[in-house]
Structures are given as structure tokens and as C-alpha cells.
Length: 391
Ligand SMILES: *[C@@H]1O[C@H](CO)[C@@H](O)[C@H](O)[C@H]1NC(C)=O
Ligand SMILES: *[C@@H]1O[C@H](CO)[C@@H](O)[C@H](O)[C@H]1NC(C)=O
Ligand SMILES: *[C@@H]1O[C@H](CO)[C@@H](O)[C@H](O)[C@H]1NC(C)=O
Image 1 (cartoon, protein in one colour):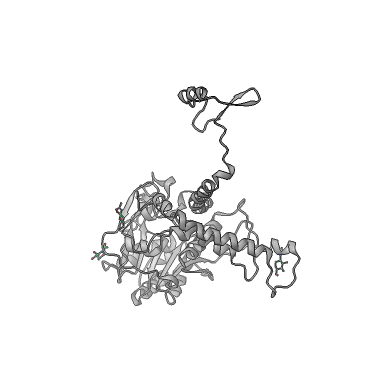
Image 2 (spheres, rainbow, N blue to C red):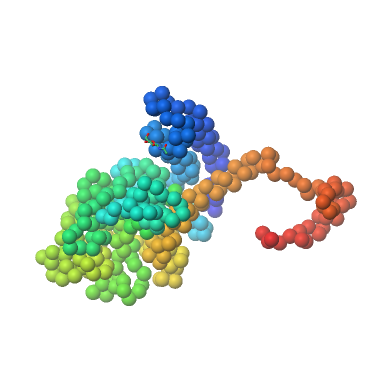
């Protein structure tokens, strides 16, 4: 599958070594050199300190890991890790990177300063809370593609459930950025090397689209009062326009009951702002291009939720099925890219560490070099005392 991650890897073998080498050189350089402007810290505190103002080594590592394999913005197709091919259905609208016109937005009104939480001074892999993993994933995604990233500490509504704050906060963000990508903290991209521009091409974000969101699984609790399935507000791609501003205003004001009598019910009742959007807003913003509904299989759920209406999260993983999976997903997000590179390095340096002792036979504690005849005989009975990865 030439377009797929595996095929691409082969092609970038050479290119890939360049940033790695840069990173290596950078590290060697950093560890031996202390810029004159720094106060004379003792060497030990210098090495423990990862927040030196001019230390960009982590950014370099992230760039080195993802840049060689970035999926082109206007690619005609994408092959996933199950070798399934996803084709654009027409001419792509986005052919250039959008960079800082895109905002990746985290919004939370909670302090998140407890153990294992993002705003705590210390965060370790062990004991990390799922939402920290989600938000760090969003931050990484923005860094990989050069988008803007912001975490907004939102004020609380006096009388509404916490998730409502995403509505006015997204509305504000849409005044400064052309595209706002909002994800709940249990939502992340499974293939972070695929840019948002490509997904907007694939899902057909037109000039008139206000928002894109995924439909929820076909289950009784996910239906609105008119018998239509809810759209999940945990993942939203919004496009700036006058009409988008209007829609968000209408949405945020829904619980006042002025335009939509009865909407105040959703201030505190499940599914809060999602129910308000599902029961009212989408029926008023119903031009064909206003709201692009994404398939649950591609933009909702996770493989662990495949029996919930097939929502396996091909592109967007939403871990409502088990929030405990979010940290593992962050691990995957790094390891699917790190592993091929590590493997490549292993083979590049094979001559230094792979020792071929197959020309010997074992007898008691001794290695005895084989004769030609013995070698031929052994080739016949190869593997007889070996199991596939067995012990
Ligand atoms: C890290 O650097 C800051 C600011 O220079 C300093 O106050 C702090 O003690 C350092 N921490 C460690 C562990 O060295
Ligand atoms: C994907 O697109 C590339 C470039 O346009 C093309 O060469 C390749 O054949 C396509 N792959 C599939 C499976 O459609
Ligand atoms: C996108 O949607 C518009 C309007 O529905 C349609 O005319 C166009 O063909 C679609 N483009 C693609 C690439 O699917």
C-alpha cells in the first residue's frame, strides 16, 4: 500500500535520518555548552531543569518524530493502519497549510491542579489522569502541524453544568481564528500525522459550512425529542463566519427560554449543551451546508466501542466507552511513530550489535564451529526446538 504509513516509511528512510542527526547533534551540543546569558547554575540543577527559557530540545524531538511522515494536506487518499483506503470525493478545497489560522482549543473551568492533572507542577506517566493525556495530545497535534493552541480557563456559569462553557468560549475563539478545532479531553486524533486540512477536505468543509460534528451511536439515550439522533459536541470543527457567530449566540442563549421555551431544562440535565444543540439549534441552522454531520465510524467512538453502532473512531477517537483508555491512546500516538524509527535505527547499527553465532553448535557449555556437512544437516531440521515468539 504505497500511500500508507508503511510504504511511506520506506521512502523516508533516508530523509528521516537528517532530523534525528540534527537532534543528536543538538543534544550533544546542549549538554556541553551553557550560554553566557544564563546565571551560573550548578551543573546538577542545570541537568534537572527542563524549563530553561531557550531550551527548544523537546520541540525539536517532536518535529523530528512527525515531520518526515506528515500526510500531505491535499493528498487524494489516506491508508489507515488496517490498510483501508479513504479517498477524497472531489477536488480538495484546502491545498496549502493553514498554520496559525487554525486554533486547537481546550476549554475547562476546573482548576485541574490535583495529582496527575495537567495544571499540577508535576506530571508523571504513572498516575496521570486521562484528561491530562487528552489535552497533551491536542497540544502535540497543534505543534506537529504548526497550528495555534490555547487552553482557556473558562469562568463558570452560575446556573449551568460545566460543559456549557465551551459554547461562549468557542464563540470568542471564532473572532480571532478562521478555524477552531475543539475536542473534549477524552477525544483525540488516532493519526496525528494527518493534518486538519486533509480531514476538512475529506469531510468536505465548504465555504458555507458552519460546524462539523459527528453523529452519536444508534442507542435510545441518543435521540432528541423529534426522534433524531444527537450530534456529539465533544468534537467540533467550526469555521468563522457571521452566521457561525449568530449560531453560537443562539446556542449560548438557548436556556433563557426566550427563543426556545423549555431549553432551560438542559442547563443541568444530561446532555446539557449537546441536548440544546440537538433539540433546537440544528433545526434553525438547517441550510444544507450549515452543519456537516460526520459518520460515527470515522469521528466518534473507539475500537473498544465497535459494538456500539460500529463507532470505532477511525480518525477521531472518543473514549466515552472507557476514559481509562485515553492515556494508552497518548502512548499509541507516540509509539506508532517512534517504533518504526527505533526499529530502523536498530537495523542501521546492526553490524555493531547483531552477533551471528549460527555457524556454531552447542555442546554442554561449549560453542563448537560447524563443519560444512553439519551446516547442511541443520538447515534441514531448522527451527525444531523453536516456537513463534515462544518461551
Ligand atoms: C529550574 O530553574 C528555575 C529558574 O532558573 C530555578 O528556580 C529552579 O530551582 C530550577 N530547578 C531545578 C530542579 O534545578
Ligand atoms: C493515492 O493517491 C496517490 C497520489 O495521487 C496515488 O498515486 C495512489 O495510487 C492512490 N492510492 C490509492 C490506493 O488510491
Ligand atoms: C461538497 O459539498 C458540496 C455541496 O454539497 C458538493 O457540491 C461538492 O461536490 C462536495 N465536494 C466533495 C469533494 O465531496
